[in-house]
Image (cartoon, rainbow, N blue to C red):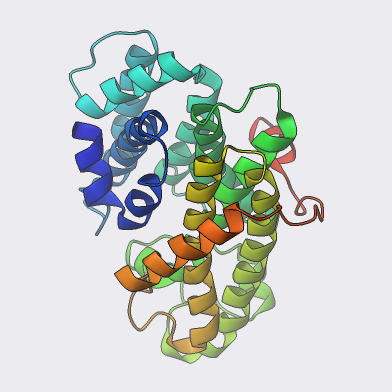
Length: 306
């Protein structure tokens, strides 16, 4: 019940997609989401997303995440329901310490006021904060830890989601003194780092957002191939989520310099449309395999461990 409440409050998009799973998978997805949401809130000093809080003592909050996750993986009661949720789903599905550490690595980058220098750095961050969650989700849905290619595809979907988030949230991130656009991209566009959201740089920012959205398409396309290997209801849910988040990237791209006048979101009727379209997609053969994007899970994981 705690996990259900967390996803209903924290992400209407994921909550809508999760309803398409069978009951056991759905509840396990909720358990995993509760941990992800709580870690994110602790790391950013916020409450179920929204505005970031006071960013002082970030290292202490990171240490709390690490300690409570270790306790949960050891089967101990943590005193925090969201971490207890993680302990349950980790034991039931075989989520490993290494998988959890990959996700926590993203919070460590934020705690260190990190900004990507190049595209590979940005994708490595996307791997930590979303791609690694996609890997956990695949394991929750029963994908074998030995099925490397399908895990790669699950990671690709998480990366696609995060690229859409970066494109959409440029203004919100700037307000929190964060920027996930690579420094090299800003320099090439003659945008001084830290000034990307000033009105006179909006026109130069649009091609960078377009670049993000094109990358999102490539990672989403790879993930759709992997979704074809799941059971019908799992495939339906994953394709619905892909459609909902892909629509965010497409709307940012379409809006051009007006993309950050207000936060882009997907309305209730639009979500229903994506759910219906995903039902049709789930009932048809998966798209032809066009290969992986430039950097896949195993390559990004290797970068993360350097």
